[in-house]
Image 1 (tube, rainbow, N blue to C red):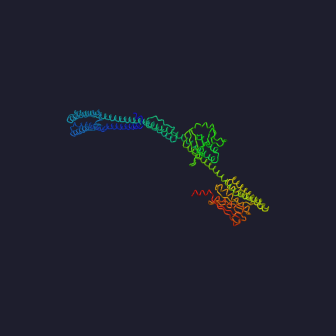
Image 2 (spheres, rainbow, N blue to C red; image 1 turned 90 degrees about the vertical axis):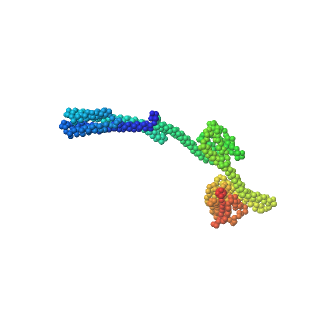
Image 3 (tube, rainbow, N blue to C red; image 1 turned 30 degrees about the vertical axis):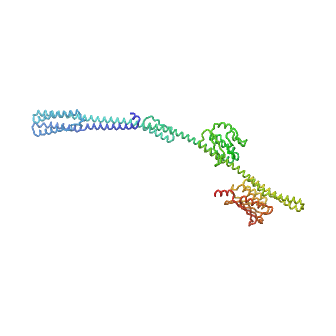
Length: 615
């Protein structure tokens, strides 16, 4: 019983078995009634023939009064037929286990009446008087009456069997109908409706709605399946909500990550362009990252080159200045309120600020919540940018110091090659003049020395002005091209005609020393054109092609007698010395068209470094 209540399959199987059983029972009862009714019609026919034979036998007794032999034979024949039919199996209706007792009694009475009464009477009638014939006819009429009763009983029995068969068929039909109705109701209530609800649940789950429930209360298979679906939907809803929350957290984390990357990217411009003020360029970036990533405070320390100790130079949200603060007017570190608010972040990690194997310092980051891999990656990116900025700043300072030393060396060389030599010559001339005065040379003899002194002073003054102009050009306007343009403009005014300029150099090709030497060679050549060439046209060309720089200063003047520098004029010598300093080839030639050409060829230091690196 519990199985039928808890199992839909068992109930459906029971319904099918019950319907099948009722159908089998109906068929069995029908077959039984049919078997019981088998032979009723034949028995009725035989009984009718018995009545006919009895009537024929009664008629055949009439001629016996004339004692006709043919009539006796007819009576005997009819008697034998009636006896054979009465004793035949046709009157035994149905099988032995379906015999009707009333019919059997009536049949037994007929046989007894025939054998015990009629046959003796018929024998007497055949050999007897008319009185015996009359008795035999009366007995035959009685036999016919009994046969009629037997037929009526037989018909009534057959009719009752048909009624019984109809009633049984109707009963089984009603039972099967009721059972079908119960089965269909059970199937509709416990199978079809739950299946529809399960289909709706699966469709809602497919659309992402895990809130729908079947709420089955039955204990059968679909009830268990519905509860399993409800549990699955509840778990899926929980996991879906957890996944949505996780996705939301990941999205927020990605937004923070992207925002942090944007802060680092935007701050890199400030870092790389902040000069020596790391506090002003770094503190805003660190503060924004602290607010975004919920970390802090952050302390930036730089490593000393002398004792390998870390010196704190920047501390965000600090209530006091770092020990090695270089600017007392800077307020980048000071924020006492914020420092008190994040004082709970007692734990910290120390990240190295390094470029390759060189440790430049460290970044100490305080935190309250554990730092995940994403934050760690962002902090590593920040330390890499800080390391690059600090390294570049360090390099810039070194380059500035080196440039300052080179500039001082160039100034010293220029003073030595030009003004110092002129002053030495003037000193020798003054000493010569003093000796001539001591020896009381004549005024005419002293006038030659005086003229040489005047000319030397003028030359020294001119060289001093050129040096000042050159240094002013190289320091006020960075780059060779603006310096050359200003030089061309200056000498165009001095020469009285425009000097042509062709400049085709890629940017950042030459070093500062190479630019100074090229500019000085150009100025010296144009100065010689102004003083000696008597030219009406001049052209300066500076072109870089196939890893070679070519400088050409040409004019249409009187040209050179040879490539030797005249006495008291050191221009060609100085230009050769400058060319040697940059490993250049310098040539002085007279142009076929007339005039002088100064030609210089050399490979810049940058190109030489590239070739050396490739080899």
